[in-house]
Length: 141
Image 1 (cartoon, rainbow, N blue to C red):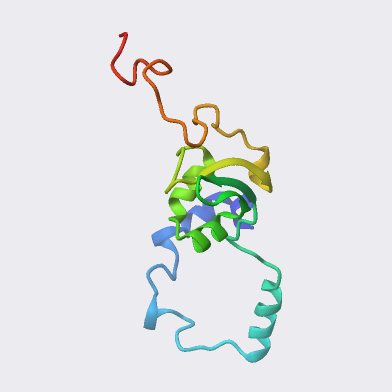
Image 2 (cartoon, rainbow, N blue to C red; image 1 turned 60 degrees about the vertical axis):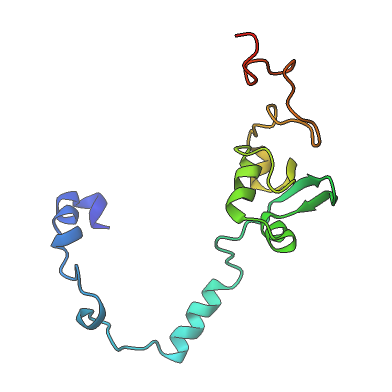
């Protein structure tokens, strides 16, 4: 509220100038206080249906051994013991494969509208040849 109407006041009490800056643990004004059962219920009810951090976007993945699979990143991580960071890089197009898995396309969700860098990826099972990419093999230039 003060930030829009009185920005100079807002700046004067921000950061280290705030009266409670650095008051943690025993120095905190709420130290030792507990929420009432009623307050806990209100907080719990306000969080129902709030899926913070859960990405339910469906992707189509392919593996030579397992075939094609439509799944979320989290399900892939748990079911096939994959690294979450690598799956995310795979889905963003910043990585071509991870432990034999390749992301084919985004089936549904917020990422389906995003432009993905799939043009550089090789089809599963194919390797780079000197004819297709002479610079990568030091041929021709």
